[in-house]
Length: 250
Image 1 (tube, rainbow, N blue to C red):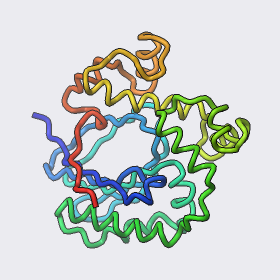
Image 2 (cartoon, rainbow, N blue to C red):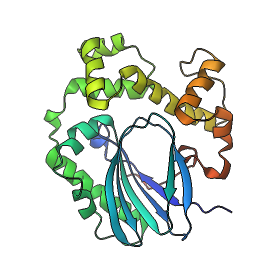
Image 3 (cartoon, rainbow, N blue to C red):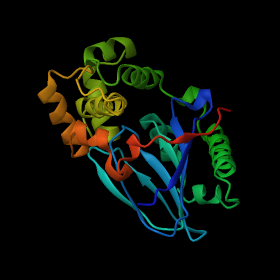
């Protein structure tokens, strides 16, 4: 039987949820390599990696547009921050160096819950020292709140009306800040929202797709496979189709 890494998520405090989707930790203590596929979810990630108990690297992963194959070697531990795009803009882009996140993990205990909470507490305090609430553009807060609420199923004209920002300005912002058009980002959110439906065995589109063919085509575009294959999730290959353990809310 193929070995699986242990995985745990922790939600941020309420005030940080426009910036952070969740904190997470993954541990492969089996001694054998684990292979995964991660799928687009509309979030950049900051990842701190330890191998054999030693800090290996700190890296920033951008927003995926298609499936990405992952190898997690034996005796590896990862701590991560799954960011909302506005979190990268207002937090990470203001950090002088990403190496600071390695310093937030120097007292790992081997207890996943304790280590994840300690990491999230360090990051939370760091965000509060770097990102004054008043510094965040309210138009962007409204923009991403609406995109999340609708899973990308919203016209740019409606976004512009609610954000008091022109359609042209919104599209320019997405191209400059995230390297993709608003439409592409919205399609990723729509695809991500479908994962929950697929996991429940509901393979008929009800998320803004024109028909079954359009649904299958878009899922294949972003995941590299069909909804039926995602539902099967052979060998627990697809990370988003594996149910993570969740630490208790704060």
